[in-house]
Image 1 (cartoon, rainbow, N blue to C red):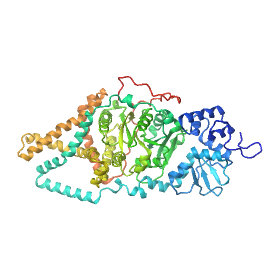
Image 2: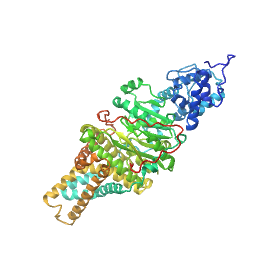
Image 3: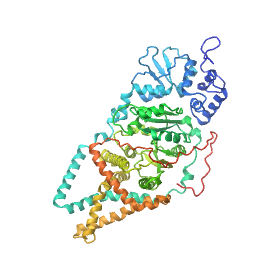
Length: 639
């Protein structure tokens, strides 16, 4: 059906079947069946979502056809290819406004891709008087605007713009004061090692003792922290769709062809209204394999491909900063390429944020290795993750202390992320750095009792590369946030600063010192000085070392043991944990070398190598009329 009236004049853009919003009403004149439009309007009214997204989600029309019909209705040219747009202006505001000045085409001055209220106003006001406006789709508009502003976006994503340069970042490395203090400490240690090696070693052990004690106390305190009485009943309740916000899901992917289809299946299983989903696959500009593979696929309307403008550093947080710049959602989450999240995870996170005060800025879901039976290394990794995400992190968060975030399945209030400037693109463990910045800004992190299944490295080499990157990022985080320790203490408070120092610095020091202290203890035991010290200083040191060893051993085994009680297959691996932490020590020394030699290099973990992963669970059937909370789980169900 055409877009003109019977007398040859343009049809009134806002007119159409009564009861339909203007952005759907005009489609009746362009071949879209009225019952379908009525259904889309009803879904949009019940879910408080955009009617056009509901129509596209129902399959009534695709995005390209909708904007072609809109151009015909308004008697405007339609651009079927990425438009050439003029650079400059506020990128986020222009993107959300859907209007930008054209470049390189004399036929028109502006390109528009209106959505939401701007689309409604355009249709209600009728065709523009100017004849120099062209229409394109939001995807093409976004792609054209990103291409036009690529250098500025790359600079912003790397934190090299004016706002980024004033923030603390791993980019600048250690301050002059840190370098001087480190040099003096190393010189003193070297002189002591030459003239009084044994006494110097004991003195060093005493100086590092508070760091060890802090880490031990946090692990033990988290392990004995009482769980909430019925986490499933009190937290896993269902929000009505009308109260669910738009959710942006960012998935950074680099050379992930092996797991691409698995990831898309996992995303399609998410139980969340598609009209309120903004899923962004983040692809590097030089990743031709992924771009070719994605070009062959027909992605749903709520899944878009974002090609990150080329630039340095080549890190995951730089790509995430681009997604944050373009995000439509009120809430924002990250999934890694190999992740298989619980289909209910977004709903549960939205419900937690809905009930919580505004200072709750982040929720950390629980990461689970789902192919532990594939080998000894994945099994030990699964045991470590179980202790961390099921015991330590929930315990610390219940005590009101911050944690070092995992790099995936953390959920944020988008406005908080933007206020903090996003992620530090120069930190290879950007999640740990962001956790500290959240605490310094006065925000809280909460536990999200929802699992995301992950893939562990299956070879020692891959595991060492991944773990060395994590520890190198911890080193960057410690250096970045200890430049002005008094400022850190004032902003974060004593408890959060203590937790940060214990978790980040404690992890580094214990991993680096593990072999030396083990060898020293063996020698002291062998020559009898451990139990028969020669003087008062040695007596005090030996007693302190024994206390650290005893409580450290308990802190090492207790959290994974408690977690393994819920996963009996992992319990038998507890005696192997000392050998596993010896591998952690090797990775720590690799990280120390890389910190000075390849500080910003991202050791990419290859995914899709596990052979025993279960496929994503199908999403449960959801009724848009279901506004009643889910029934309580049986009494035996617990997280």
